[in-house]
Every structure is written in C-alpha cells, then in structure tokens.
Image (cartoon, rainbow, N blue to C red; front, top):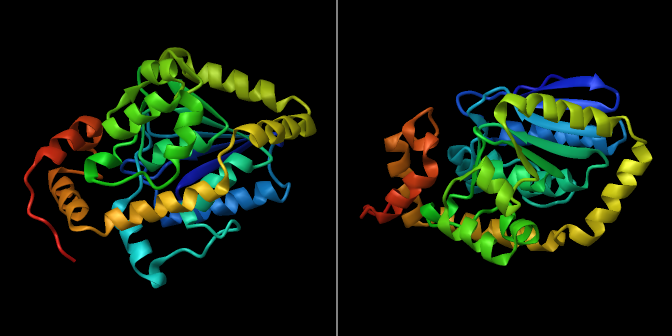
Length: 287
C-alpha cells in the first residue's frame, strides 16, 4: 500500500519505521487517520512487526497538531466524516486506543513539536524518546477554550501524576525535552547529536527479542496501566462541544490570521501564543 502522510520502511520483518512527512508542519488530518488505520489493521492481523517506530522527516515538527479545518469539517457533516474504526469510537480516538493495544511495541521518537493531537499520539505510544534540544510537547487547547479530545486527561495523570497533569493541561504551555523527561511526559530526553543512534540501537535491540515475549509483556503492562476505553469518548464530546462555540471559533479565526497552521512564529511558539490569544478581546464568531 502507498501512504501519503508518512513513509513506511520495513527495515526488517521485526522492525518497521513510519516517518511522518506531511508538509508544511505535519498536521494530522482525515487522510493521515485513514492511513494510520490501514497500517494498524495490518499489524492487528499479525502481518506487521514486533516493533513499530514513529518519527518525522521534519526536524521542527513531529506532529504539529490536528488540522482544525479538517477536524471541524469532519465533525460537522456526516458526508465529511471518516467511518468509525474497529472500536466504534470517533476516528481519532479509535486510532489512539488501538495504538496502545497493538501487538507491536510502539515507540515515538520525538524531534520537533508534538502538541495537541501530536502530543496525544505520543502519549498513546508505549515508549516516548525526545530530542533534548529539539523536542517540544504541549496541550495548548485550553488557550482556545477547549479540552483536549484525545484523552490526555486520562493518560497524563498516570504518567506524570495529578498535579503535573493539571499543570500541563491547564497551563497550555510548551515543554522542552529536558523538562518533559523530568516530569515523566517522555521516557528519556537524549542529546540531539546522539538521538538517532540511541533510538536506532534501542529499537533494533528490542526487535531482536522473542515476539511472543514482547507481546505478552505489553499485554500484562496494559492490563494495569491503560485507562478504560470508556474514559475517552466523553472527552472528545466535550472537545467537539467547545469547538462548536463562538468563543473557540473567534480564537481560531484570529489564530489563522496570525499564521496558525503555517511555518510561522505562531506555530513555533504556540504555547506562548495561546496565552496571548486568550487575553485578546475578540468579537465572538457565530456560525
């Protein structure tokens, strides 16, 4: 199969590398969700590797966030919506739930920005490695007047603790690789000069181990660590409700005017920008 939002390198039968490549900033959209679903289906059928690594061809953006125009269009009209996935949840929630339960070990190698849904994808992966100097993670949605829809309110407390989860979700700020490691947002932050070698060594090492043993370890850890699936749909419902409101839409309209979803200062410093945006006295947008 040909993928358009990422390339797939089947390095060995036991190790596959999916490299996100969707200019200008690796936005997540319906096409990417559909292609990830197709990839996951192959792994779920037992046709995939023991280890599935995700990285990015863009050193500045791992996965920037969800493409808001695609998100709103897909959830406004059934004609634009993707069909429900195997979990029957909303398509993005379906991808995240399946990601954590794939029989393969999933590893996110984060160099560049992983905010919003990009952060959600990293959180749903089994292991997260970050470039100390180049990684940026965050959940900025509160600055738009919304809750993150992909489940970080369930995943973050289990990783970083209750107080730090509140700090990440309520503050909406950026976390560099070093601070993300300190908090437990990522497993480890590696100096960028050594990042590729470290990730390559670790993934190849794990991929040499017995596939059944890896899958069993993941299954038993999942049993005691993953949030219940039922926790996720209400969070997406709350996100969609906020996205339909005039305050959210007014902030999004201003963000686009300032350069959102482009290679711009807004995207480079999004955590700081949404704080400024929330302070603006914007005319409400009614649709």
